[in-house]
Amino acid sequence: MNADQPSPQRSSVAIVGGGLAGLAAGSALADAGYQVELFERRPYLGGRASSYELPGTAEVVDNCQHVLLGCCTNLIDFYRRLGVEQQIRWYDEITFILPGGRSSTLKPGALPPPFHAAPSFLDSTVLDLKDKLAIGRAMMALAPKLPKDDGEDFLSWLLRHGQPQKAINRFWMPVLVSALNEDLDRMSVRYAAQVFRESFLKSAEAGRMGVPSVPLSQLYGTAADYIEARGGKVHMRAAVDSVRADADGVQLCIGGEDVHADYAILATPFGGVEKLLPDGSEAEGLRNQLRNLESSPITGIHLWFDREVTPLEHAVLLERTIQWMFQKSKILATRRDSAPSGSYLELVVSASKTLVEKSRAEIIEMAVRELAEFFPAVREATLTKATVIKEVHATFSPTPGSDAFRPSQVTPWPRLFLAGDWTATGWPSTMEGAVRSGYGAAEALTNSASNANRFLVPDLPAKGLMRLFG
View 1 (cartoon, one colour):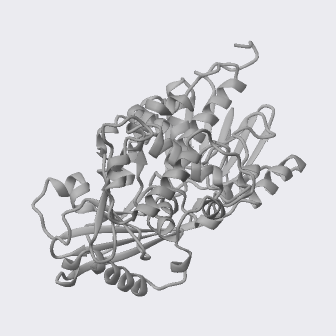
View 2 (view 1 turned 90 degrees about the vertical axis):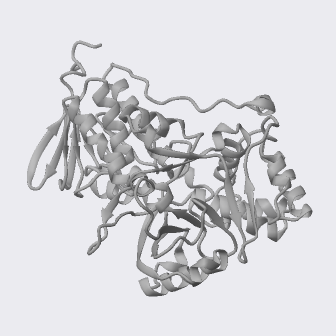
View 3 (view 1 turned 120 degrees about the vertical axis):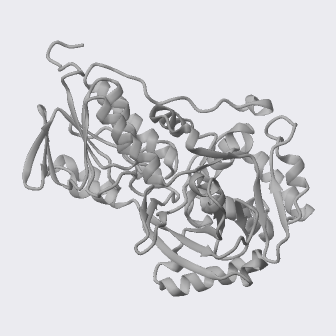
């Protein structure tokens, strides 16, 4: 360590934003001996992965259902760091259902990757043989390597590779719109390919789906205790008004008071970062990058019925507005362990641009009507409660060419860093991408302090025949 650099034990780090990116950075740096102070403007942690009590009820609802896959190595490392990995419920099977109730289940078998799910895929009743053969050809085109983002959208790629409309509607669309939160004609080929290579093809372990079994704010609220147990401090309802940076440190204005830190990480959505960047010509290039990023909405629809309407814990719902069903009555640990009383379902609509302007009543009526097409028991059940949560700027859009505008975690100011799923992580806007950005910012900070630490963990290795492609 250079003599003129402060030791990590005496270096202070201010983190602006208590979403996953900020929490990951703060936890890693607290472990490395830095004095961490995290400032979150809201009264809870988790950012877009948070929960709150529904007014007038005893119900705690997530702002949107968040899931992870086995390939999310850094997110899983973050859970292990916090000691909450046992609060993730893992599934090896995904059920696809058509209106009318016909369903198929995708699950791994005994064949080596990338063919481990082939038997269940070939047994699918929601696709015909022509669709399956076309999908298989396209998957093999994606297997050898991750394509570059050359400006082509994935719908054009699918059509160029001879994908029938039914295959698009019943396979490619439900998987990718949910994973990337964007329409097929607005998503980069690179990120669409990454979803399938990392989760479907590399290994059976990579494709396992994890769902938190506790409310999100409870899951991520443990990060506050983790940071404070290591000498840090987490401030709630602490909105940062402005940031100034120079060679000696960073000044934050919070509620009219100045707070000094040796280093700072801005870990807010990209719209918020643009407003906080220090004044000066060096900020213009970064501001221009951020102005070129776009966002896409997600809508969560929460429904409570007086009886069980399906035995399934989750399912992909095909060819309707609603896309996923999660039966929270069976997923949440507190509900599984208590006497059954009705059924609580959360429905998810990703890339929900058509719902943004619709009223709560219109969305609930649509959701119940469509849900009954998949689960007829809904028609006999009584809806006892319902709410709709619109996350209008849920994720950044992985549009063709968008990588050119995603900034790195390093900024023109040597003591100021960025974290957020919208930064250049190599991943789309996911919880894994957010944690990667936080760990990446923490690594960049320790490198600048001549006390380099490694926080990012490697991807899952390819298995079976996928090892030929890496």
